[in-house]
Image (cartoon, rainbow, N blue to C red):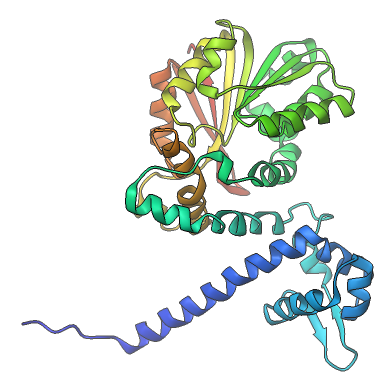
Length: 360
């Protein structure tokens, strides 16, 4: 009978890893609170300040602010001077965790409490199968809009649209564009404001998200954009064949109940001389190759607790966010796109863009 030899160093190393993981998980919850309450922004504006003054500036209860500051100090996110009692958010930290930052990583911390809120229901899915529908994620579109505002919008004009040569010229002259899975319409409303000669239509399953998109468009005086609450799989029922010269999806295919039906409908709707531009998570699609993915643990968690489960809830394929390039390219080809180009940006290792054309 063989005996297992335990390496004490491996035990110690793994223990340290788990302790760090637990601390970081807790910090995500507190970072989310710091973002939603505006505490990071307030602290960046006030400079070194004690808890009483910070709570007053932020309009919050001091006792809760003090405990939050404890977590931020212990997590080495906020600096604390024990002699003066002042707390400070270093300028270098503010560059990554405030609304004034180009890349506010606090936005992504919000996903952790949103996903965690459904843990009991997810446990039931583990035991019985099935999934949780979009109604279990009331803040999801709100967070996605924030993410889009800093990850997609700044890159649209200088980097994403130029992936299709001549596309910006066509948009300036005037074409019809459709965004499938538009969410709160942040990207589509921006495009509509930039290209007044083109017309834009957004479709999303969420009535709430579509209502928000419409209200935003109206507030901005945009009359060349419309939004409809329609399941992406029903696109062929509401759009005529060849009706759009541009169709876009931003992280919207892998969580569909029927990705084949959606991409076939997209192929049907895009004109023969048009293009389908899809953004998704860049992954290999297998655990062995994805072990070094820079956001692997986070994306697999997001997939299990949202992307995969919302698809399974509708009796769908449950591809998950890490479905991978090979499966995506096969899906697009199966839908009838003869030419599928794959593009990435060196400074964004998590996103991949597919430029899909009906004809070579």
